[in-house]
Image (cartoon, rainbow, N blue to C red):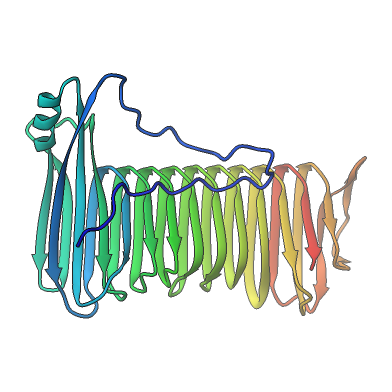
Length: 327
């Protein structure tokens, strides 16, 4: 199969301001003077239409792309580091790649050996699957990239960036310490995304519902239109270029960060916008339905209707500005 190694890392989400550095996690560093040993792994599993791949890794990057033919091709490369070559070679045995294949289902799982110590070890995976394969990926430390897979995709990680491109049926995307980038993605009904420490960047997404949550990170979404969204960040800016759907409900919240929403001309919406320490700017003519609370920099609370009020829009931040622009 001769797939290429090393697997390139998924780059962090680029900052909105080019003068800033991207939010990057701490990557594995090999101690000076240590020696590396590697060991390849290669398997091919015949499958039919609608196959399922489940892959669970401890440390190391994972890449899944589409191949040709009705089979799942797996190539992996074990890496081990130690103070000398003999110790490094012995350590390779502590990374066990377990495989289970039943019918149309293939499962790969990395287990620690007898020492139960995964430090100084990682396993890179480069996997090719039929385009309609369902993919479920889990990792503790490492980046995950999935490209052009049309089956359902689920990704869960602890420390690592996630990059998804051309994935039409996303279900869940979660990481704790890392960013999430989605390009030309989709979901059957609702997509859930979350990260604790990382940014979320979406470029073109086709799904009815969207649930996005980050604790420390920005969210930037361009090219999505659905009927419901709940987008939250504790410490980060929220930037959306979207269209509202009649009957849709949209809740966008940040504790410390700006909210910027760019909308095309449309029939209308009901707006409820609040900020404790900031200002509110709305480019659409709003029919006010209550008092507008002001401070010396402008309104802090706006409630009203634009047009036919056919969708609901709630924007709230504690420390930041709220802006709704017409594009």
